[in-house]
Amino acid sequence: MSVCVQAVQLPDGDRTWTVLGEDHRQVGPVEEFLEYHRVTGSSPHTVRAYAKALQLWWRFLELDGRDWAEADVPGLAGFVAWLREGTPPGVVLLDPAAAPPPRLAESTLATRLAAVVSFYRYHHDAHGVAPALARAWSGPPRRSRYRAFLAHLDGRSRVSRRSPMPVRPRRREVCPLLTPAQVAKILSGCAARDAASGEWRGSLRDRLLFATLAETGMRLGEVLCLTHADWHPGSGGTPFIEVVPRDHPHRARVKGGRGRRIYVSDELERLYGDYLWDLAERAGQAGFEVSDEWFCFVNLDGEPRFAPMRPERVYRIRDRLHERLPGLPEGWSPHWLRHTHASALLLAGVPLHVVSRRLGHADVQTTMDLYGWVTEDAELRAVAGWRSFTEGWRVTGA
Image 1 (cartoon, one colour):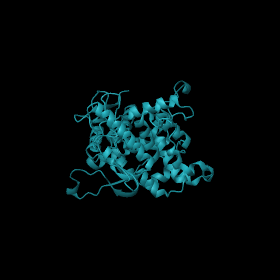
Image 2 (cartoon, one colour):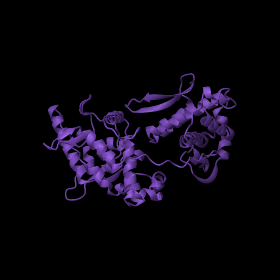
Image 3 (cartoon, helix red, strand yellow):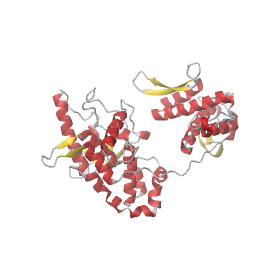
Image 4 (cartoon, one colour):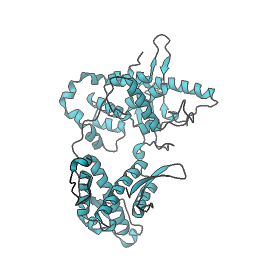
């Protein structure tokens, strides 16, 4: 492909993405837009998603013979059709069966389109580019986040509006879930207490990681960002975890940069204590001392030892569990535990706004969009096992 997305390693060790043209140089307008998001603190995942969308847009412009600065609404319409059908504009496949077009989900298509529209909003507000698209935006005005550098001198009032090509995603499918028995199987597959000796057999680190995902509903990136200082014992009260936005060497992040407090059970606190004792013993044997600043989930056997875990490492653990444990659904991932947690709380009668705050959603509407089916579908209330959802996290296994 003549236009491609290229990963870039920054001097400070962080990773970002850019878009290269057919001359293997950065596409200037795209790089300016991506750099704006880097310096304003957008997530690397957001930058990567924008880069992918704009790589597709630039490829479409090449195929259609358009100049990026003269793009218009018909051009966006052609882009949407191209993403849906997988063929360049004006091209008809003589043998469609020989090269079936990809079928993008409408939600993915909407994300790609939103990135392109955001790109043009930036360049219109900063440089006055693509007035045809600017005039086409419809809907109630709101203040734009993109401001020309000298806009305050000429008194211009910038507004951004809805996309001229709204794509209405299909109704969201039911989130994939694990049953309490499947969650217990995953935990005992990581580590289980020997009935005779009372000692743990297996990886306490892995059990704690999956137990934390299951009981708190945290995202994987949030769990990997935890340090030992974030675990707060009950001391007569309820133990809790403090979710704190911080940098992670492997790009794990607290989404949105918003911290929160999550109360947990005594069982999870005791499991953390057992893991901490095991970690301290391993570290002491290697000449290290665990401190509050250490990331909680670290390499125990692989090199470098006691370095923060990579997200990829967690997925390799997941793959091994799936191979060893029968009865787990195909394609399950750590994120399923978050969906399971939220659905279990809602089925147990926990108010939606409380679940939203526990999950760290910026808006309760996000929670409703994801899990509205839980409260709407009366038949699910007949699944009595979910009403005792906390028991699923307390099965220790043998």
